[in-house]
Length: 61
Image (cartoon, rainbow, N blue to C red; front, side):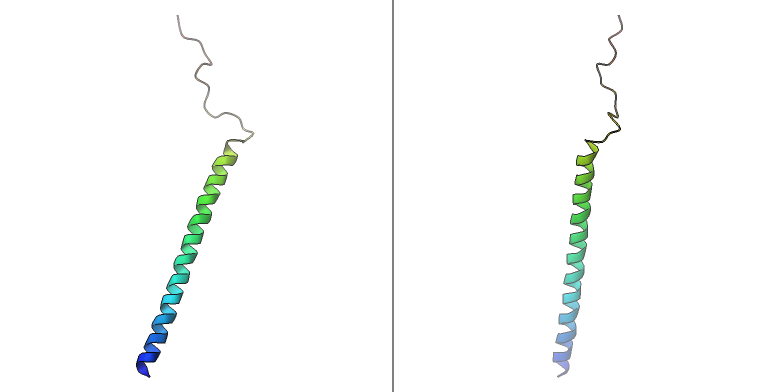
């Protein structure tokens, strides 16, 4: 009977560990998707271009 109880405890521990790992994986994936979405929306931002275009001024004579 003692070995059965140890088995049940270990089984429950493994299930909790798997659930924790699954949650971490889901959080990482959600963060990754949020960064991608932010990068995509940053391209359409209304602030305008951050760096000046290279051909804005002519070359010095």
